[in-house]
Amino acid sequence: MRATPPNDITLPQFSAAFIPFGLLAIAALLYPEMLQNVALDLGRTKATILVTSVMLIPALVLYPFREVSQRVANSAHLYWSFAYLLFLLHAYWAVFVIFSGVANTFKQMGTVIASVNFLLLFWWGFEAILLWTARSTSPAAARFQIATRVFTFLVFAITLVFLRGGSVRTLGIIFIAAAVLAQIVGLLVRERDDARRPLIWSLFR
Image (cartoon, rainbow, N blue to C red; front, top):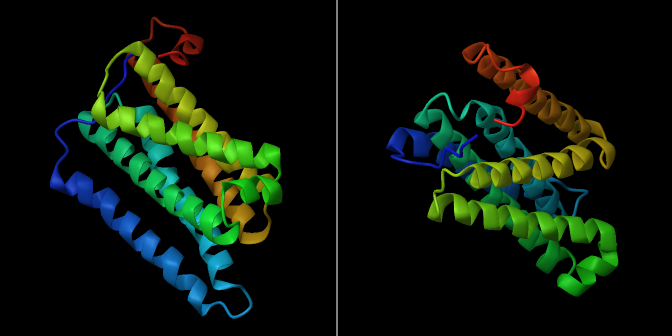
């Protein structure tokens, strides 16, 4: 198991991730202005976490196939990194606009939920920085990337499906189904390419 850092990113690869990122960011900031019964800042806080979830879907779907080609790996890392920028936008609006600071965020959200959110914010950010600066191919880097993605997936899946309702829960179901299906297909593809290795060992590749 080795990491596949971003390398030789082309303009089409960058554009394929940057354009959706830009459109989603604009939509998250402008759409709440059309809602009459929702406060603007609260609407933007909710919208930014939803567009982060949308941006994460292609990142998590592509990641199991990162070893297929450098193009796939680059695309997965680009979607993943732009999703984090959207999450930063959400964190800013939630912490400094809605809750007016870190201390009040813990007070209003509760210690457990706030701690998980801040852990995700710093963990994901640290991993993204290492991804683009260290560009390590070591097994340790691969394990760290997998751990980060699993933790991020769990936080978003639980939040979207179990802590929300309506259309947000529907998005959560799509989010979970897409990521899990991609992981299963990725395991089957790797098993096919290495028939001598039992399927269970593919989990650790």
